[in-house]
Amino acid sequence: MPKVSRYRIFSKTSSTPRRPFESERIDRELKLLGEYGLKNKREVWRVQLALAKIRKTARTLLTLPEDDPKRVLEGDALLRRLKRTGILDEEKNSIEYALQLKVEDFLERRLQTIIHKEGIATSIHHARILIKQKHIRVGKQMVDVPSFLVRVDSEKHISWVPGSALNPNGDGKLGRVAKRKAKSKKTKEEGADE
Image (tube, rainbow, N blue to C red; front, side, top):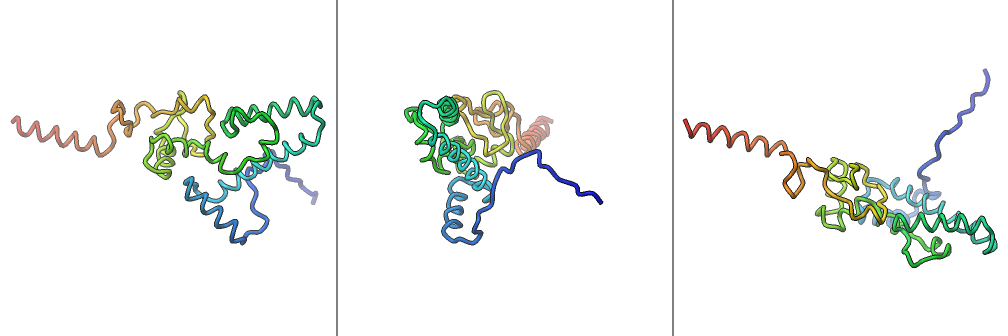
């Protein structure tokens, strides 16, 4: 029988740790899970892999001479991308700053964290539920992914989905319980009129 090769048409989004039972790492990950309301450790590992790729790119660019066109072009692109997502501050204009990034810098830019910090949700877990139940939009697009990285210019456009039952402005549809209460109130009024 011929050998069948399996080729991936996608890259892995997370990588598991080399030492699975290292107590310091486990405690650090559990702290991040609780602080940022993450579902599982794979969400932490996914951010760690993204950070590792950025750091690797920055390290290779720093080995090139400063006037190298590849370093200038790719370095500016890397810094622009990090600034657009808000991971890197606007005044940090060097590739060395990309090496100083931490996992927390990425987790701070998640939609779930920003909704909690803006006060739309009462807790970080409440923020996750609001997003998963499709009550939140960024711009005109409804977003139901808590790990959505919010760009700096999109941050001011986070709002409730029109028609959301939880919208505090009250312009949304009635929820299940509110409909039932309104219906019972209407029948009581009709019974009292007769």
